[in-house]
Length: 306
Image 1 (cartoon, rainbow, N blue to C red):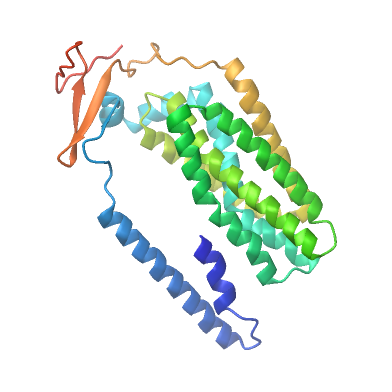
Image 2 (cartoon, rainbow, N blue to C red):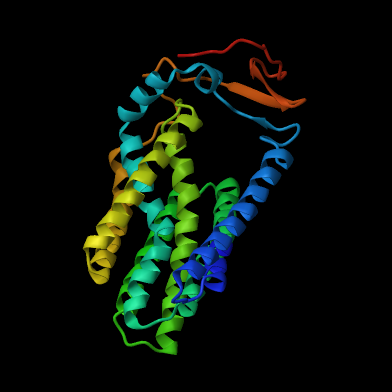
């Protein structure tokens, strides 16, 4: 993503000759395709789907045998899915559209492409540290709700200050303020996404994580497209106010929903809920088993369901 911000302004110049611009765009697209293609091949061949000798608790029946129709029915009838899943689908595309948001806000104020590139690059560069930090906090401290609320609050404050700074006259000080807001927004959005995704998949169990994530990202892409369309018909400031309102509503919902829909770790209403099911990864494949006794014995090919 950082390369995607840096490369086009360096290759595509403000040429009056359209044939030269077409050649520049072609070079830009081929370069980006080569970089992403190499990254894909490295990820596909070098990265394993799971660490060696890893052990984790996985619902066997939910992971392997649940049909898509059943999974969808469990999701749409689960109020936690709507409460947290809708929030994720609304928040995630805001981060994805931040680059367009920067351009739409800064270009009319007279900022050049090089100036717009500064907050754009930093916005993307801060994402990886934010996601890594969120994952570390979730694994060690198990403070998912706290991460969500703190990240949404930081995102809301950043977007409010950004919306105000963009109305000021062009200056180096304002550019620094816009850049700071972009970094804070990028950090907060990158923190909140893995936390919300983890929370939604947890609250929609025993639905397989893959099914939940697929539906969530389908909704995310849908809202992302809607944001792009809406931004073309609204003034930049009005669209910023809309984004701030959405974040504020999701932040309020994050505080209210846990009180309205308290989460129960065991769900006896579903025939797919599972007790004490484990899976271990050995020799390149997952092996299922059931924890049955204090001695730690496992009975393979069996599960225990409500």
